[in-house]
Image 1 (cartoon, rainbow, N blue to C red):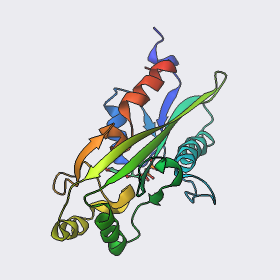
Image 2: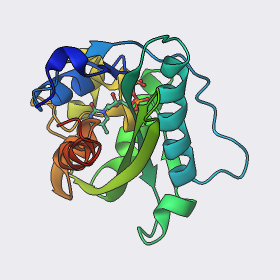
Image 3: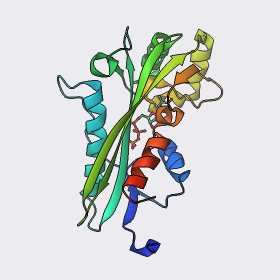
Image 4: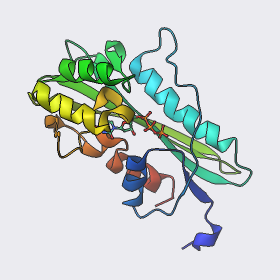
Length: 206
Ligand SMILES: Cc1cn([C@H]2C[C@H](O)[C@@H](COP(=O)(O)OP(=O)(O)OP(=O)(O)O)O2)c(=O)[nH]c1=O
């Protein structure tokens, strides 16, 4: 077994407290460096291409700041809405983080009682002589419950929607906006743990 001192450092390129907690649950020792990138969607870029590109750019932006060999993990989460969930990752409408309370209210009313898709893309980037990179996008279908207008107002007043894609957190116990999901729960929260764990094993990190 390689002594841990010989392992290159592992960096989580994220400012998200949810990603920190999820990664910690895998038992990995890591350092945080926040990525700072332009998150504008390119013209004609599909939601799937967009979320993958952002996860890669976040990892690359942090790699550029480092002089020592490292493995970097970054991720991006998007919420997509469409009348028909087939092919939605290519054609659906992106619902980002809300601009303000009105935007959050409108988004939560649109999502109420229906299905949408959450995609998290994650990228692993290894620098140095054994340089390698890996990107994967994981999809979860989410069905919202039929929450009331009053529940929306209370949730907005709590401040929770504002740093969340789609204006909600599945893990918020007071609002509990989701009826059921088809796929990974940790993917909706921001890091698909089973897939990340598998990729880390394949890269020889776990
Ligand atoms: C849909 C949903 C999103 N989210 C969060 C996950 C992400 O943190 C956030 C989507 O924004 P992201 O841009 O993916 O991530 P971030 O800005 O929070 O962090 P960083 O780019 O530094 O890694 O929304 C939840 O916590 N619960 C949910 O149910």
